[in-house]
Amino acid sequence: MKKQLLLCTFCILCILLSACSALPPVSSESSSRPDISVPPSSTPESSAAVDSNSSEMQFYDGRIGDKLSTAFFDFTVDSVELAENIPAEQGTMILDVVITVKNTFGTEIPMFYNDFQMQYGEGDYDCCYSIIDETVPADTVPEQYSLKRAETSTYHYYFSVPQEATDFAVAYLEVYDDDSTGDAFFIYFERQ
Image (cartoon, rainbow, N blue to C red; front, side, top):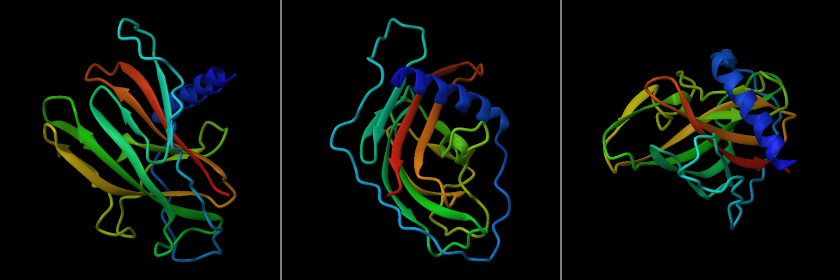
């Protein structure tokens, strides 16, 4: 059952990588925002065993604070909070997600604001990428940056999500220079 859910989630991720567009502009109207609680897990739940001889896509998942290792870098979602200081459109809330990335690839790699996607529902379009406009603080992830060999960076990713959403996943899909894809990675958390 869990593998089917992860496979379904990955298929949605693939569709979304080609279907999700930039976020709509953020208005200055503020609405009441519910509290978000994101208890970290002490042990990651890997949905796939590592098999270096397999050419099949593998799925890996964890919780806030868990380190996941991709072909290019290690990453950790350090924290998730409501961003009360950023105006949200009616019916939405802004999540401030802090992500630390360490280059393990052996050479400099390009990084982009849309390397990590926020998923929050069952539909094909229930996803978004970090806001990178003038409404977010200077500590937000840049549109593009380079990560030198063995370098670590920590940035805030600001995601506009529906106020009624309760289950979330920060998703990353390995994409190679020839546009082929590798493994998929998910950090799950929920609003309580």
